Image 1 (spheres, rainbow, N blue to C red):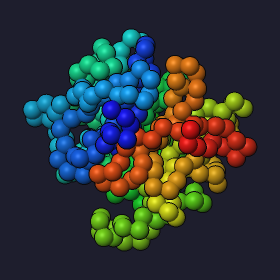
Image 2: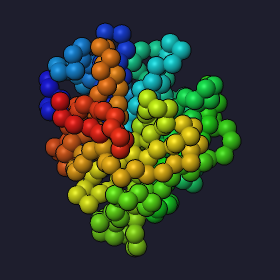
Image 3: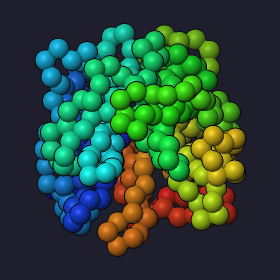
Length: 293
């Protein structure tokens, strides 16, 4: 099958060995009851096999919805899936482990790594020197300003260490606008912003970028913030140039087997029509820009 035949949101590709492995949110269960994650496989980024279920909700598992944004990382011979889970009470981020990228993933901890009284989504792993961080969105239900946060993890991913640090807020980005449906869908008054889908990129000049999604003037949009110090702690400032938009988001970047830099996101952002879209990603004087191949 082709990418346009695959109905997932929040796509993520891991290149391992001769294969590309693609993960994502099942579009058909994104906004309702959910029970698992899948993987698709390809050797050329054009023809894909799958879906192959890589995780199924075990009996007694605390979450029954919001199975979102699985991202797979290969570290020290193991594969780690960072994913969002939710219940009626809250949403949190957990890490799953497998010996193979398309194997059955097992949950590493009984409860989320993020706080029990927070709604947190879209986690990613970022390593700087000897430290590994979980970067995630503190959801608008708790923080209408839309915060992007970070916390250090223990080396075995069993728990967090230190305090949670806020990197930046969506409301401070010049291109971001309040969610127009906050009142109708969530019963929230006032200006409500959101952040999701973080992806960390280091520029050739050493500066650090975080690509992230929010709502723009024309819908779902990917923007970027820069740490001029080159450190994950920042300070961070928002760039005016968007990476992609409108109506597409939650992107990530990866290098092909040949070394080319690619950008992957879901498009369009319309229920039932979402599919992975593969783009070229390039550095410009104003930051990163994604374009059709």
